[in-house]
Length: 133
Image 1 (cartoon, rainbow, N blue to C red):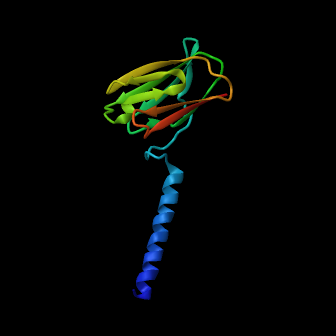
Image 2: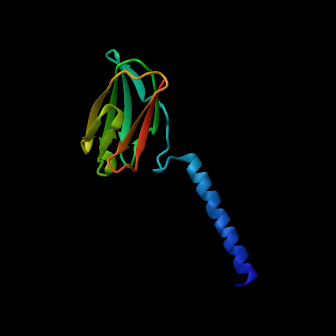
Image 3: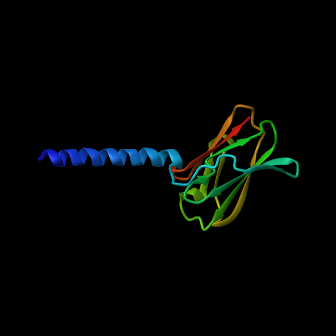
């Protein structure tokens, strides 16, 4: 191999690695920006409501909620046909399909401060977590 070809390959590989590092720092694994707690937790009729969107993953991927109060996880879909339309939350024994378009409310019993509730899609490709403080 010529010296110029080797140098070109090394520079190209370096640029690819830099692009991957830059991309991983600005978005989640599914390419959707993680807007953790971007007004997705609020009080409604005396209980905490945590809202997530499901399509090609879950957004936001991390939410922060108050501990020790009754909560509802409201998952919204809009033409969701991928594996994020089936949700598994092992710690509360929840496994169910979501509507292709609409909402599904999941009752979450009060969680202790410092605990984290994790959920996954049916294939385990996408995930989300709710941290209780």
